[in-house]
Length: 400
Ligand SMILES: Cc1ncc(COP(=O)(O)O)c(C=O)c1O
Image 1 (cartoon, rainbow, N blue to C red):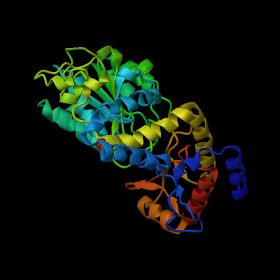
Image 2: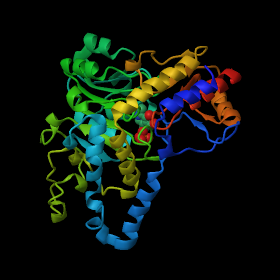
Image 3: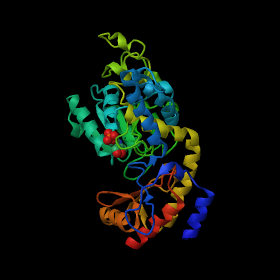
Image 4: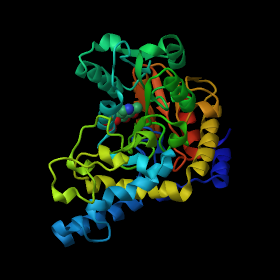
């Protein structure tokens, strides 16, 4: 495979790189970096700056009146995100809300959906669960007076555990796409198995939202949450999404931590002492929405609406397959079948941290490493190119 071949593929299958600001290369022969870290922090869409400046102008020009007037009144700002976020994850608008950050949302949703009873107390997470999820579930166990070492079960085989000891499981909480290996789990099958065992099920979709098509309403988990700074390109620390299945909405039996933003918007300013939560996922909101943290999400979700996940996924499958074909001398730990992965490939390499640094400094290839021996490369179909893949493979070959 030659550089010319990569360039030809880019001409035939161009993606949407022009809509993004591509950072300069820290080193190497090329002006722009070859960016493979969109699974960690996505790049900035060009349109974000103007959108954010417009939102700042509203504050400058309206002061407190901006809550209720202007082009995008702040009191209604979260509603601008609900429909595009719902479309992205295959949810109904009433099942979807954008608020807080991911770990916060997981906690708020576990308050509602982790209800240990009798022998049914376990929380099932994947063997290589993201540390924050692991800390979150362990602290939830302690919060309920349980021992996290026996309550939290880490397993590489959630279906096997559910079949064997499902009557002990209260909650299954898994990453839809695993952050380390890039494996896409069978979300509908695991959701069905968890429910059949009598457990509730939630999904951490940090590495799945904007990466693979999702149909949350149809697949039926109790809840899900995802961040917006990876494949959703909404900036560092961008707010997270949350999904609560329709069957739970408006159910007064569900426990929920409350704040004034979770009461009915129509009566919020009556300042009643008791909340009247609306029958939608907005009932899980607590606080005044941070408008500037929502601005980039609004712009970024519009890109997904315009381009569509179907087109993006098709290009993603082609791009990742191409990258994989160039890495035939490496050990790829990500499953080979496109239906079992998103765009990320994880390579097992010696001294992954050192390699990642050399790739950046000597070649302008931005990947990342996870201790001790995993190098992660995520060609994001919105802005990554075949030529980026060629550069990454060449640089890895030279460095290894
Ligand atoms: C799979 C997964 N879960 C949870 C988190 C934590 O997200 P936050 O820092 O927004 O709470 C991350 C962050 O990268 C993640 O990748």
